Every structure is written in structure tokens, then in C-alpha cells.
Length: 73
Image (cartoon, rainbow, N blue to C red; front, side, top):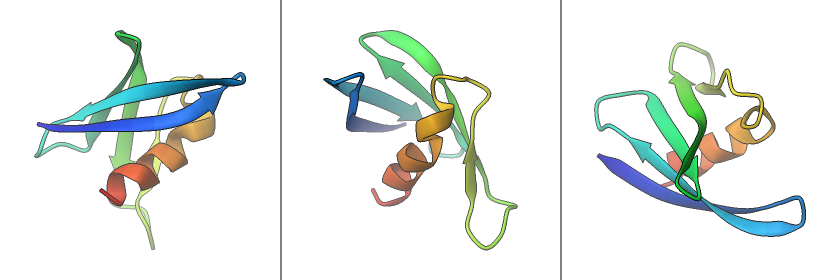
């Protein structure tokens, strides 16, 4: 299992998002304060770089940044 902590500012307040993913999966679950915000998916088929997508509106504006954070760690 992979775990990451992503820090950002939302509506003027600092927050920490817990990101949990399985080693063999392209699916990551995003939590804030113990609540599930949504699921982030890595589409490895897209070219030239993988795209990060989500069906959860709250994550859509930051899906790419979170995905880039995961890729860099």
C-alpha cells in the first residue's frame, strides 16, 4: 500500500489530504479529516503523459496537481 500526504490551501485554510493507493492499482483514494473526498484514477493509456481523472467534483480542480504529486514521489 502506498500512502502520501498532500498539503494545500482550500478556501483560505491549510489542509492535509491523505492519499492511499494499492501497489498494483491505478486507483487512489483521497481523504480529508477522515472523510473520503473521492477516488483519483491514473489513465496510463493517454499520451504523452498519463492523465489523472476523477468523477468527484470536489477533486476535479486539483486532480492534476495531486496526480503530479504522486508521480513525483
